[in-house]
Image (cartoon, rainbow, N blue to C red; front, top):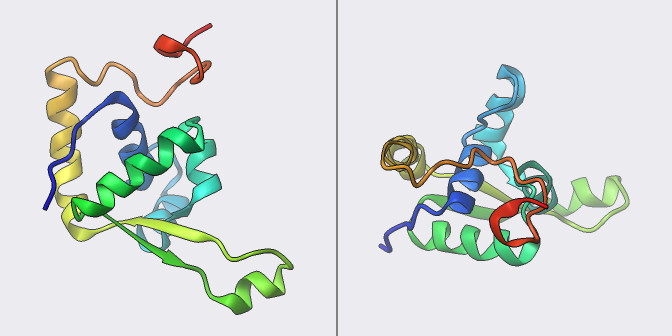
Length: 124
């Protein structure tokens, strides 16, 4: 399994997948069902070109799994199927420790708040 490089963006994605920053009921849904790509993009304020490579690295490391929603659900709502991303039990075990270590070493100074993620440094 691959190791996970704990960049500020990776930490932001992990926090979202762990349901950090959402209420208790919503957190339970995030942990059991996961989040679909657009939801993750909005929560993390990361563009797709940044978000999806991170999700793929987390998947290859065994920290995240992905799955397609059922056709019937999408058809009932009159839209295409969504791909969901969910933290695995391995990810749920390792991510909190990795996030804490990143914060302790100073590599986790950003908490998922990017005022302008398209600019270097994340601010205008």
